[in-house]
Structure formats: structure tokens, C-alpha cells
Length: 96
Image 1: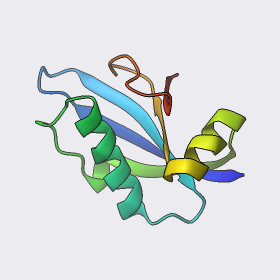
Image 2: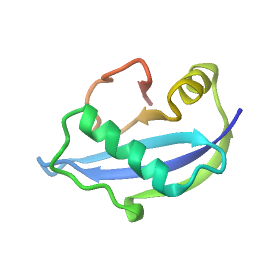
Image 3: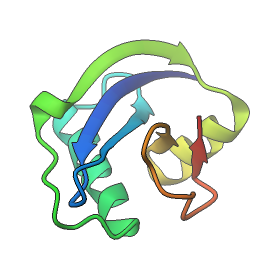
């Protein structure tokens, strides 16, 4: 399965920068990727930060790994947590 990857940055309330990818089926509207990013932030308790389209941008298309494909098929998206992200809150989030 090919997926679109949205490179995403958010400044946490403590001033630290979070970097994560929102991975969605190819041709997903950018607004949906943004909504999925907001859902992730809510799930990890980062409710004081606003995610904007300028900070959640399409980056590239890639072939999904099996665990990513399963999550995308099941819930419509996958979060790849990278810099400044708290430990994973669900099996549908992995740290990069």
C-alpha cells in the first residue's frame, strides 16, 4: 500500500518542539491529515498546542511497512513519533 506522509511539527506548551509524521492513504485530503494530527495530540494530552496546515505538510509518498498498513487500514492513519514526542500511547504509534 502506498501512503502519503505529512511531516508535522508542533511546539509543546513547555516550548519543546515535537516532530511526527501523519501517514495516510494516498490522495487523502490534507485537512484529514491535519485532523488526525490533532487527534494524536489530544491522545497524548497536548491540548494547549494548535496544529496548522503550515506545520503539517505533505512530504512524500512511500510504501507502507506491514504494521503501518494495518493501522492505516483499521483507523485511516498512522503516527510515526519522532523528535520530542512522549512515549507511544497506542500500538498505532511508533517512535522513529
